[in-house]
Image: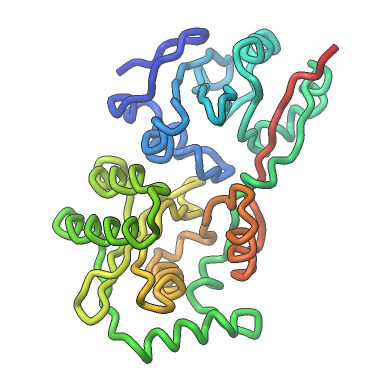
Amino acid sequence: MQLPCYPDFAPLVLDMQAEIQPALARLPDGVSEFTFANLYLFRKRYDYRVCLVPDAASGSAIIISGMRDGKTFFETPSLLPSQDVLLSLFETHDYWKCIPDSVLEPNRERIAEWGIEITEDRDNFDYLYLRTDLAELSGKKFHKKRNLVNAFLNMYIPHVEKLTPDTIPLALKILDRWRADKGEEGDYIASKEALELFNILGLEGNIYYINNYPAGWCLGESLANETMFGIHFEKGIDEYKGIYQYINQNFAASLDERYRYINREQDLGDEGLRQAKMTYRPVGFVRKYRGNLVEK
């Protein structure tokens, strides 16, 4: 399916995958939102619409339009649009979201000259970890995490398999149990669709059993030209104490060594989640910025 050209936008649909996915996979920053799978799975939450904008260097590049909390935003994953296009986007959107370093840094002065104010969007920074740190949990800084994993292994007999079409029904049962235990929807809809379409969307992950009972799973995909792996979903049954720490460690250990980093996405401003992510000692962040047109 051919994407429309700016200023026309079209709702994001599965038939757009062949056109969008290869371009996003080559992006250097590793922004967790900028994969076809992530966009598609959250298309309803953010009312995503997409188009192409011509560019002399790349031929064309995608622009994403969305809405959240009554505000409209646009995203430019791979390039800085021309001044005319950028300012016209501000006429129909409230702000510019998820600006990556690769778009911002070469163009800071130009963006400022165009009357656009840039601010860090800390709540949406992706957390970056060394794969070897999460896999090995070595040294004093991971002492507590290592103890939790060891306690889990002393208490339970885990078994791990790759997620396959045959194991998806079991993963869906875990997801239903997770929703029932939490008493809320959370990202249930996106998680369910991710499992049902994981092969089509190019996702991969593991399913975890405890005493032969399905108890957890995780799912993600390659980012930043296969130098980084992004964890999009991770679900476990809470009655098995330490299951999330075990999944985190085991999945990191199972990943191919070509992945130097693991991207565990953002905290969205949730203080408890922020503290939990920081306890794993990130080595950096995938920084994202927000742009607003300055009133004149």
